[in-house]
Length: 109
Length: 109
DNA sequence: TAAAGTTAGTTACATAAAGTAAGTAACTTA
DNA sequence: TAAGTTACTTACTTTATGTAACTAACTTTA
Image 1 (cartoon, rainbow over the protein chains, first blue to last red):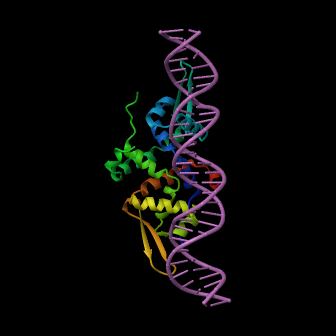
Image 2 (image 1 turned 30 degrees about the horizontal axis):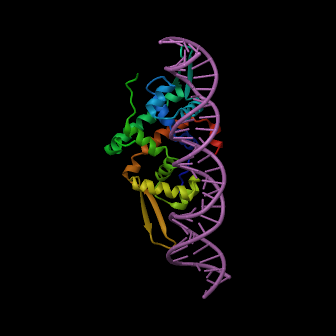
Image 3 (image 1 turned 90 degrees about the vertical axis):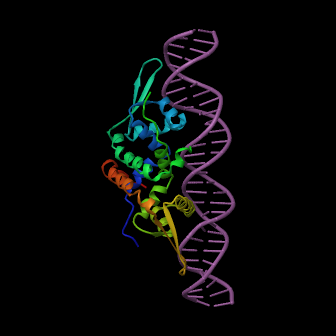
Protein backbone atom coordinates (compact mmCIF):
# COMPACT_ATOMS: atom_id res chain seq x y z
CA UNK A 1 0.00 0.00 0.00
CA UNK A 2 2.88 2.27 0.82
CA UNK A 3 6.60 1.92 0.19
CA UNK A 4 7.34 3.75 3.40
CA UNK A 5 8.50 1.43 6.20
CA UNK A 6 9.47 2.14 9.78
CA UNK A 7 13.22 2.12 10.28
CA UNK A 8 14.19 0.04 13.35
CA UNK A 9 16.92 2.51 14.32
CA UNK A 10 14.44 5.33 14.24
CA UNK A 11 12.04 3.28 16.33
CA UNK A 12 14.77 2.59 18.86
CA UNK A 13 15.72 6.27 19.02
CA UNK A 14 12.10 7.18 19.63
CA UNK A 15 11.72 4.54 22.30
CA UNK A 16 14.68 6.03 24.16
CA UNK A 17 13.67 9.67 23.82
CA UNK A 18 10.01 9.12 24.54
CA UNK A 19 10.54 7.47 27.91
CA UNK A 20 9.01 9.88 30.33
CA UNK A 21 11.57 12.36 31.75
CA UNK A 22 14.45 11.08 29.64
CA UNK A 23 14.49 13.91 27.11
CA UNK A 24 14.12 16.53 29.83
CA UNK A 25 16.96 15.01 31.84
CA UNK A 26 19.25 15.01 28.81
CA UNK A 27 18.23 18.55 27.91
CA UNK A 28 18.89 19.69 31.44
CA UNK A 29 22.36 18.14 31.34
CA UNK A 30 23.15 20.06 28.16
CA UNK A 31 23.55 23.09 30.44
CA UNK A 32 26.48 21.34 32.09
CA UNK A 33 27.23 18.71 34.74
CA UNK A 34 24.68 18.61 37.51
CA UNK A 35 23.99 16.87 40.73
CA UNK A 36 21.05 14.77 41.70
CA UNK A 37 19.18 17.22 43.89
CA UNK A 38 19.59 20.05 41.36
CA UNK A 39 17.89 17.94 38.77
CA UNK A 40 14.99 16.89 40.96
CA UNK A 41 14.46 20.56 41.86
CA UNK A 42 14.68 21.93 38.33
CA UNK A 43 12.72 19.22 36.58
CA UNK A 44 10.20 18.34 39.25
CA UNK A 45 10.99 14.66 38.82
CA UNK A 46 10.94 12.33 41.81
CA UNK A 47 14.14 10.85 43.16
CA UNK A 48 12.87 7.41 42.36
CA UNK A 49 12.40 8.06 38.65
CA UNK A 50 15.51 10.24 38.30
CA UNK A 51 17.55 7.48 39.86
CA UNK A 52 16.12 4.91 37.45
CA UNK A 53 16.62 7.11 34.41
CA UNK A 54 20.18 8.11 35.24
CA UNK A 55 21.05 4.45 35.73
CA UNK A 56 19.60 3.60 32.33
CA UNK A 57 21.21 6.57 30.62
CA UNK A 58 24.56 5.65 32.16
CA UNK A 59 24.26 2.07 30.93
CA UNK A 60 23.27 3.26 27.47
CA UNK A 61 26.27 5.58 27.34
CA UNK A 62 24.50 8.93 27.37
CA UNK A 63 25.58 10.00 30.82
CA UNK A 64 28.54 9.59 33.19
CA UNK A 65 28.40 9.60 36.95
CA UNK A 66 31.25 11.27 38.83
CA UNK A 67 31.69 10.84 42.55
CA UNK A 68 33.49 13.58 44.48
CA UNK A 69 34.19 12.23 47.98
CA UNK A 70 33.64 15.55 49.70
CA UNK A 71 31.47 16.13 52.71
CA UNK A 72 28.68 15.54 52.15
CA UNK A 73 29.44 13.49 49.06
CA UNK A 74 28.95 15.30 45.75
CA UNK A 75 27.86 13.29 42.77
CA UNK A 76 27.71 14.91 39.37
CA UNK A 77 26.13 13.66 36.20
CA UNK A 78 27.34 14.83 32.83
CA UNK A 79 26.78 14.02 29.17
CA UNK A 80 29.06 11.80 27.13
CA UNK A 81 29.70 12.52 23.45
CA UNK A 82 26.70 10.35 22.70
CA UNK A 83 24.61 12.43 25.07
CA UNK A 84 25.91 15.65 23.53
CA UNK A 85 25.13 14.37 20.06
CA UNK A 86 21.44 14.84 20.82
CA UNK A 87 21.86 18.61 20.92
CA UNK A 88 20.66 19.24 17.34
CA UNK A 89 17.48 17.28 18.04
CA UNK A 90 16.81 19.29 21.19
CA UNK A 91 17.51 22.55 19.36
CA UNK A 92 15.08 21.54 16.66
CA UNK A 93 12.38 20.81 19.23
CA UNK A 94 13.12 24.06 21.05
CA UNK A 95 12.86 25.94 17.80
CA UNK A 96 9.65 24.19 16.78
CA UNK A 97 8.04 24.95 20.13
CA UNK A 98 8.69 28.68 19.69
CA UNK A 99 6.51 28.72 16.59
CA UNK A 100 3.89 26.12 17.38
CA UNK A 101 3.29 26.04 21.09
CA UNK A 102 0.80 28.65 22.22
CA UNK A 103 1.63 31.16 24.89
CA UNK A 104 -1.31 29.82 26.91
CA UNK A 105 0.58 26.61 27.54
CA UNK A 106 3.46 28.42 29.13
CA UNK A 107 1.25 29.12 32.13
CA UNK A 108 0.17 25.55 32.56
CA UNK A 109 2.12 22.88 34.35
CA UNK B 1 23.36 27.69 40.63
CA UNK B 2 22.78 27.71 36.92
CA UNK B 3 21.31 30.36 34.65
CA UNK B 4 19.79 27.66 32.49
CA UNK B 5 16.04 27.28 33.06
CA UNK B 6 13.53 24.94 31.48
CA UNK B 7 11.41 26.68 28.88
CA UNK B 8 7.70 25.87 29.33
CA UNK B 9 7.14 25.67 25.58
CA UNK B 10 9.94 23.17 25.26
CA UNK B 11 8.48 21.18 28.14
CA UNK B 12 5.09 21.18 26.47
CA UNK B 13 6.60 20.07 23.15
CA UNK B 14 8.38 17.23 24.90
CA UNK B 15 5.25 16.19 26.77
CA UNK B 16 3.42 15.89 23.45
CA UNK B 17 6.15 14.07 21.58
CA UNK B 18 7.06 11.71 24.40
CA UNK B 19 3.57 10.29 24.81
CA UNK B 20 3.95 6.69 23.86
CA UNK B 21 3.18 6.07 20.14
CA UNK B 22 2.58 9.73 19.33
CA UNK B 23 5.87 10.39 17.56
CA UNK B 24 5.63 7.15 15.62
CA UNK B 25 2.08 7.93 14.54
CA UNK B 26 3.10 11.38 13.32
CA UNK B 27 6.16 9.97 11.58
CA UNK B 28 4.05 7.35 9.89
CA UNK B 29 1.64 10.01 8.64
CA UNK B 30 4.52 11.93 7.09
CA UNK B 31 4.46 9.26 4.38
CA UNK B 32 0.99 10.45 3.43
CA UNK B 33 -2.65 10.06 4.52
CA UNK B 34 -3.41 6.70 6.00
CA UNK B 35 -6.29 4.74 7.34
CA UNK B 36 -6.77 3.27 10.75
CA UNK B 37 -6.02 -0.36 10.01
CA UNK B 38 -2.92 0.49 7.99
CA UNK B 39 -1.50 2.27 10.99
CA UNK B 40 -2.24 -0.48 13.47
CA UNK B 41 -0.59 -2.95 11.09
CA UNK B 42 2.52 -0.89 10.37
CA UNK B 43 3.12 0.41 13.87
CA UNK B 44 1.99 -2.54 15.92
CA UNK B 45 -0.13 -0.26 18.08
CA UNK B 46 -3.45 -1.45 19.45
CA UNK B 47 -6.70 -0.01 18.15
CA UNK B 48 -7.47 1.30 21.58
CA UNK B 49 -4.34 3.42 21.86
CA UNK B 50 -4.33 4.49 18.21
CA UNK B 51 -7.89 5.66 18.62
CA UNK B 52 -6.98 7.66 21.73
CA UNK B 53 -3.91 9.20 20.16
CA UNK B 54 -5.59 10.17 16.91
CA UNK B 55 -8.38 11.84 18.88
CA UNK B 56 -5.82 13.82 20.89
CA UNK B 57 -3.76 14.71 17.84
CA UNK B 58 -6.88 15.85 16.04
CA UNK B 59 -7.89 18.08 18.95
CA UNK B 60 -4.40 19.50 19.18
CA UNK B 61 -4.42 20.30 15.48
CA UNK B 62 -1.73 17.89 14.26
CA UNK B 63 -4.02 15.58 12.35
CA UNK B 64 -7.26 15.71 10.35
CA UNK B 65 -9.79 12.94 9.99
CA UNK B 66 -11.46 12.49 6.61
CA UNK B 67 -14.47 10.24 6.17
CA UNK B 68 -15.11 8.74 2.74
CA UNK B 69 -18.58 7.18 2.78
CA UNK B 70 -17.65 4.27 0.57
CA UNK B 71 -18.37 0.64 1.28
CA UNK B 72 -17.02 -0.25 3.69
CA UNK B 73 -16.41 3.22 5.02
CA UNK B 74 -12.90 4.59 4.47
CA UNK B 75 -11.48 6.94 7.02
CA UNK B 76 -8.17 8.61 6.37
CA UNK B 77 -5.95 10.51 8.72
CA UNK B 78 -3.54 13.11 7.44
CA UNK B 79 -1.22 15.76 8.83
CA UNK B 80 -2.11 19.42 9.10
CA UNK B 81 0.53 22.11 8.58
CA UNK B 82 1.24 21.88 12.27
CA UNK B 83 1.74 18.13 11.95
CA UNK B 84 3.97 18.63 8.91
CA UNK B 85 6.01 21.20 10.77
CA UNK B 86 7.48 18.41 12.88
CA UNK B 87 9.32 16.99 9.88
CA UNK B 88 12.67 18.64 10.66
CA UNK B 89 12.58 17.17 14.16
CA UNK B 90 11.87 13.72 12.81
CA UNK B 91 14.60 14.06 10.20
CA UNK B 92 17.03 15.06 12.91
CA UNK B 93 16.12 12.01 14.99
CA UNK B 94 16.33 9.78 11.92
CA UNK B 95 19.73 11.18 11.15
CA UNK B 96 20.96 10.83 14.72
CA UNK B 97 19.85 7.23 14.88
CA UNK B 98 21.92 6.35 11.82
CA UNK B 99 25.10 7.34 13.64
CA UNK B 100 24.32 6.39 17.21
CA UNK B 101 22.01 3.41 17.23
CA UNK B 102 23.82 0.12 16.93
CA UNK B 103 23.00 -2.38 14.24
CA UNK B 104 22.21 -4.92 16.98
CA UNK B 105 19.12 -2.97 17.90
CA UNK B 106 17.72 -3.23 14.42
CA UNK B 107 17.08 -6.92 15.05
CA UNK B 108 15.26 -6.37 18.29
CA UNK B 109 11.62 -5.46 18.63
C1' DT C 1 -32.64 -14.31 3.96
C1' DA C 2 -29.45 -15.76 7.29
C1' DA C 3 -24.43 -16.08 7.88
C1' DA C 4 -20.17 -14.20 7.30
C1' DG C 5 -17.09 -10.29 6.05
C1' DT C 6 -15.47 -5.44 6.22
C1' DT C 7 -13.71 -1.12 8.76
C1' DA C 8 -13.36 1.63 12.61
C1' DG C 9 -13.67 1.71 16.50
C1' DT C 10 -15.12 0.63 22.10
C1' DT C 11 -15.26 -2.03 26.45
C1' DA C 12 -13.65 -4.81 30.25
C1' DC C 13 -10.04 -6.62 32.43
C1' DA C 14 -4.80 -7.47 33.40
C1' DT C 15 -0.22 -5.78 33.70
C1' DA C 16 3.35 -2.28 33.70
C1' DA C 17 4.96 2.33 34.60
C1' DA C 18 4.96 6.44 37.29
C1' DG C 19 3.84 9.32 41.43
C1' DT C 20 4.06 9.97 46.63
C1' DA C 21 5.94 9.84 50.85
C1' DA C 22 8.58 7.82 54.20
C1' DG C 23 12.90 5.42 55.17
C1' DT C 24 18.09 4.45 54.88
C1' DA C 25 23.35 4.88 54.70
C1' DA C 26 27.27 7.37 55.52
C1' DC C 27 29.11 11.02 56.90
C1' DT C 28 29.58 15.93 59.58
C1' DT C 29 28.41 19.79 62.35
C1' DA C 30 26.13 21.91 66.46
C1' DT D 1 23.94 12.78 71.32
C1' DA D 2 20.77 15.01 68.11
C1' DA D 3 20.12 17.01 63.90
C1' DG D 4 21.61 17.98 59.11
C1' DT D 5 23.27 16.72 54.47
C1' DT D 6 23.13 14.11 49.90
C1' DA D 7 21.88 10.42 47.22
C1' DC D 8 19.40 7.34 46.95
C1' DT D 9 15.66 2.96 48.00
C1' DT D 10 11.27 0.90 49.51
C1' DA D 11 6.35 0.27 50.02
C1' DC D 12 2.22 1.63 48.47
C1' DT D 13 -1.22 4.14 45.30
C1' DT D 14 -2.61 5.90 40.98
C1' DT D 15 -2.33 6.20 36.07
C1' DA D 16 -1.13 4.42 31.54
C1' DT D 17 -0.77 0.78 28.44
C1' DG D 18 -1.60 -3.93 26.53
C1' DT D 19 -4.86 -7.75 25.26
C1' DA D 20 -8.68 -9.66 23.54
C1' DA D 21 -13.34 -9.77 22.85
C1' DC D 22 -17.25 -7.03 21.34
C1' DT D 23 -20.15 -3.54 18.57
C1' DA D 24 -22.24 -0.68 14.70
C1' DA D 25 -23.25 -0.15 10.13
C1' DC D 26 -23.05 -1.70 6.07
C1' DT D 27 -22.31 -5.44 2.06
C1' DT D 28 -21.38 -9.73 -0.05
C1' DT D 29 -21.92 -14.68 -0.27
C1' DA D 30 -24.24 -19.14 0.26
